[in-house]
Length: 328
Length: 128
Image (tube, rainbow over all chains, first blue to last red; front, side, top):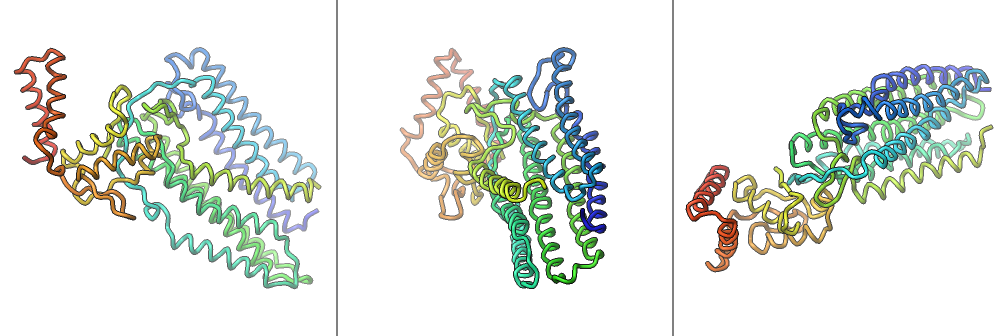
């Protein structure tokens, strides 16, 4: 079993994460299919009276999936509490994310296949505004992130008195630095623009692009940089005979949660803002351009390649870690 | 600033882009020195082949409306096309007039339509 201070940290993590997940369920998830009004189901145009007919079954199916996902989360948490396996908390959180994200995307794809297989063709607009990297990415901030990662590795490698597990720092480095080309790919990502209310759609897309870049930067880049730096600092102040004092651990956890908490606030506010802006607008993917293109998540070759490499790397780390350590 | 592309337009895509940009130049919305987005960006936003957009930009360059500078992209260079012969200049007008006549409009209606279109263009462009 873990040391008492580590148990305290894991319980703290659970106490912070559970209310956030419940808030997300109540405020964002439960009525997600209705976010564009009663004329749409998950952004797919549906006929009038849909929610009085087949829409009821669709809503019930969506709710059943959400309940199943949260049930999976609850069972995992129950097992941790009953078995007092607090050290499994990160696996519980990561496992939920790994199940939740593909399940939501899969459900969305399946719904599109069933309800929106042939959206109507509409005239499209082309924005004649150039998108430059420097308008979206702060290069000094990226240099700082790289420098902090380099500093962390220096701290890890220059304390040979104590062994360190290289997998976690390597994984954190991959996730954090991988976001830099990821952000560059997001700048190039494009969404088809409907001709009707083109300016408002363009504004929403730009806000959405900046929002996703910001949230990825906070949660996948800066959060990972801070975690890596904390791991390295704790490693630097410890020796074979001397573990860092609990206060150091708590400080590390607090700094990580400060970044994570900030990310959550930015995320919930941003989603709310986009919901308000997009309420009256035609959702992406609910129409086809004259060139036969219908896209709900934006398209870009660079983004697809980057995501395959980055996500593939993350999965490879997870598979390697499981094959090496198992679930013991 | 936006170009609109219709689903039932018979013109090729590159022609729609070229004509749309020329229209914005004529209206004074695209002014000299303004930069157009890169060929790659436009092709990505439209979901069409890079060559299609490249052809449109090349046509605008050939006609003297844009200058392509290495690294800076396509920059609007002029509000007027390169001097061309009168016959070439009037060819699109003759085609348009032929279509209007064949569609059954009278001479008076055609003159009125041309006058209205010209007034709209001058109102937005603010000149001539």
